[in-house]
Length: 528
Image (cartoon, rainbow, N blue to C red; front, top):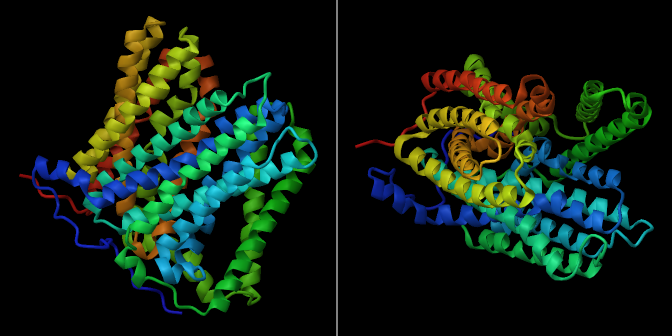
């Protein structure tokens, strides 16, 4: 089957406004339908994640589930880390009925949102304290929620890139991030408030309270579904539909499912065989074991997929277009040297704030701040400031261009980490805490919006979903891995030395941004 021609810049679904020439134009762009729709879709994407993590953990603890079993539920969110594996299917495989009705992107978007709502309803109808197999059913619904939520992220990212030009991506990404954070607040603080209001507490568990809480959360997914139905399908997406016979799609899906089963079998089997041997042998050995276990599982998945394709279960051309072409396209468009430079930048850009963020709450407690003080300053006020920073980053990216905003974001992320040194010496100083939270969250919101706009500009709309999924998975891999050692670094360096280290590791990022700016030709809006 012929490969669809590469298109390197997205075309909007309807006539888009011209690039901003003045500050008034930049601010007026906030009311564009694309910005408002991404605000709503961001809310829909941010809602599910905490229903797997913190809110579900508290529900299970109140229900009397032992703490070890509670932590296992965090694995339900592994789909977010491996969404790039099935993102190619989202790019290529049509859905019966829905694709013909809504188009390629909106069909998957609606399916994912319905799957998220259905999984939440399934969790609501399961009482983890009932005994028997109810905890197993809760785990299955949580896994389904993680998978459908990650799928929704894949489609929304692709949709955002395809409805607007590169210079508009800053505003769209800031709106998406703002909506995402509001969704997290609703699923986090909102869910806990509802469960407490309806009478559930530790030592006084009420299944009905949590049931109604999760049913309300499922109902709020209607925001995303309504937005999906009201917004248009991107024009470029309609032209990229795959016309291969439905039998080829079914066989390709069968290969994918067989690969998934191979991964699960090897990953689980190795864990059963060697997990007990490394238990209690130290964090480094455990990390190496888990990394090897993951590598063996992925190797088995790719091996099974390759063998099945070679045996003719699926079309070799179809498999190549689905999984190989997106990666080759990236290296062919940019050349090997520039492509590796860009991947290094993607993998390192967020390293300063992510490594610090892993241990930030522990630091606040070590400085003597109470949980309510941390909740108000960091979890409430800080989120509002980060939303403002996101919109500031989006407006400036629209006004001055992606690469300039990317450099400013890298500088701010590293510089604001130094402010934590002052708090480390000052100790319990509430005024200083709010000042540092303001600076840190403003910088984080600014950098996030600029970075998402940058990632969007790198994708080819022939392979939007899979390329962006690869970028978004890569951008947290090394920072989160290094962040796992942040406690040991604090023990060795102390808090001032650790914060200085997190600032210094941001310096090479600035060099990478400068080098990338020299090599790339990203369209910049004109200035006065």
